Image (cartoon, rainbow, N blue to C red; front, side, top):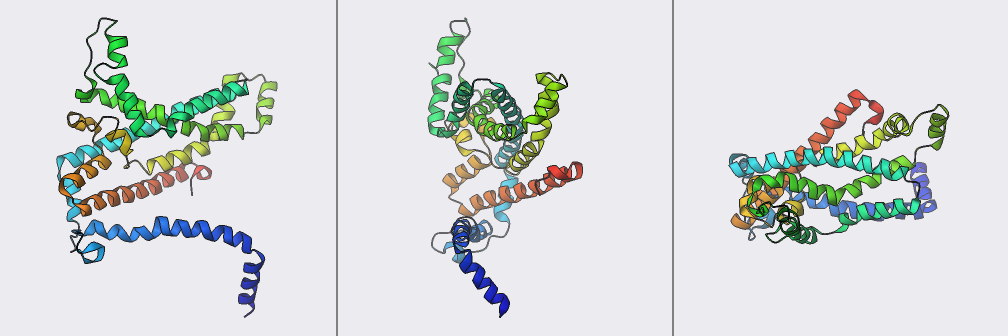
Amino acid sequence: MRPRAGLIHNLVKYRALFLMVVLPAAVLIFNNYVPMFGLIVAFKNYNFEGGILGSPWEGIDNFRYLFQTPDALTATRNTVLYNAVFIVVNTAIAILLAVGLNELRSRKLAKFFQSSLLFPYFLSFVAVSYLAYAFLGGYGFINKSILEPLGFQPVSWYTEPAYWTVILPLVNLWKNVGYGMVFYLAAIVGIDQEYYEAARIDGASKWQQIRGITIPLIVPVIVVLVILQIGRIFNADFGLFYQVPLNTGVLYPTTNVIDTFVYRSLLVSGNVGMSAAGSFYQSVVGFALVLLTNFAVRRASRENALF
């Protein structure tokens, strides 16, 4: 009885702290874990009459569809390649911007640039799609204000799939680089200034300080963020690939990703089970990639691993 009495005593003594933990934990459980019961839909021929439990079992037929159709393979290829480009380009530019902002002498100017770079992150992709169309439409800014005055023929951006392999990474970079930059800037600000003072005394240049102090000390943050991004390499930003290209059919070879493929398949066929299988497939592969990436990092540098 004594351990139980000690537990009750601790619950009463630290009731405020336990209450602070219980409420977020309850939200996490009901929002993130209870809905996981619906994963069985991925293995069923779902119908609204039978519901989740009453619908007949389909086995792995829903998953076969993802791998047997050419469009699904194209969507998977596009998802992986685009996300690989996003990870490399966004991480490099975000680190570069964070280092540059940290070196600005004027704090007001640094805050202005930081806010300006972060602002696009809060825009919806509906608004971004209108901005993109204002630039890329038939009478858009690029055609009318840049190409035609220079003597070039206008480009029909929304009928040429090849251009979107560049347009989409640029839009993604413009919208998300400010958000990633905040993490690296916070890590840089947290570096002890004594390292830089010692380096200046030794005659190190600014570039040598960045290369020898700043970058090595933020490597753990870079590794953690990259691992988390790799875990979502099979997940695409639906708004980026659906709203920005305006769901134009001719652009599907370079804009169709797993998320848009599943969405369009659901609209056409109404197959809820296949849509659930697509999401389940993304989650499992993403989880496996996190484990594999973290294992590789632990083999190379144990202290930089996520867990």
